[in-house]
Image (cartoon, rainbow, N blue to C red; front, side, top):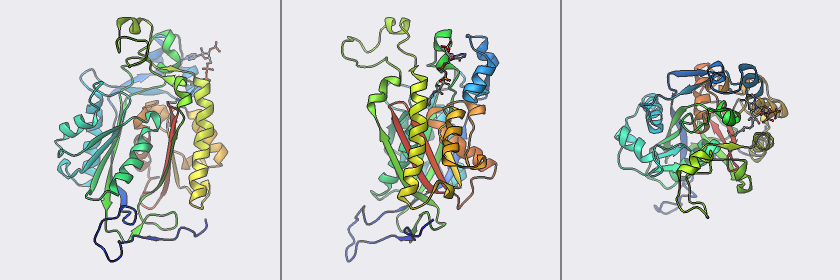
Length: 366
Ligand code: UT7
């Protein structure tokens, strides 16, 4: 590790009390973590009763053994609220202390509005901005970066960041949908970010100060049709945004070119880690905990192998939960915190890739 990035001292606008968001980069650190998965477990054997699949195929091709399925009484926002409550408890604050909500989901309760406002209402949080982000499997990385950016506007102390998805209601549990139906599960995770406008030191790769350090985000819309849900939507050539014919034509279920997504995911996730490391003068070896999106254990193993990281540094929970889309990263954080890998002072990198194509990585000191 080189020392280009020695402690960053937070500046104050010299000789002026005017707030300058560039000069006043606040410290933004994780103070609370929560997660929630529904009780119902769906095993590979359960799925084999519904469609032409089997436990061996699912385990060897994906690493998934089981996933969770939300109860019919639950909406996506309910999963999000459970995770948020745990995050608030662990941060030692109440819903009244939330200054901003940033949430990622691709399975909102309603077509409009998003679930941010529903989370705000169910938690009885103040009437703060509740922002939905549509970054698909990379959504949580975009949420963290967005929260970090908004923190620079000033006037905020606590930001609730949530990732929640309820995929099991959108999947096609027939033979035709087997290449996606076996992959996804339901879940939610949340973080509380504490913003300190007056911190004397910001987190860097060279100190042990807790906080968000940097982000790298991107997208390439030319990959859209490799993984998408076609309807409902405002597509040109369609008079209504959804018809019964759309259901018959399986336009409302996910369609994926698995091999194409697999190829791009492995390449992009490796290059994201390398590029964010290079920007900060470190190598992948310097990362204590790598938290990758959970789409396929084989993707994460390939990325781990190419980066030369030992198994214990890379968190995987896909065997238990499948791909929970927006929730995979905080679910991994919860797991790593439980097993003792994620403790204060650890250098953490998240990395995710998904539909869009969309991708992101966050570098932070836990
Ligand atoms: O989080 C969002 C981003 N998503 C991803 O990153 C997913 C990336 N892609 C993948 O993880 C993998 O491509 C899959 C797990 C989706 C599929 O694995 P694969 O090794 O790429 O399989 P394949 O699509 O090439 O299919 C191989 C065979 C096919 O049969 P034939 O044509 O060889 O006879 C499929 O029809 O496996 C068949 N197949 C299944 N067999 C049993 C597909 N799904 C299943 C299934 N059970 N569930």
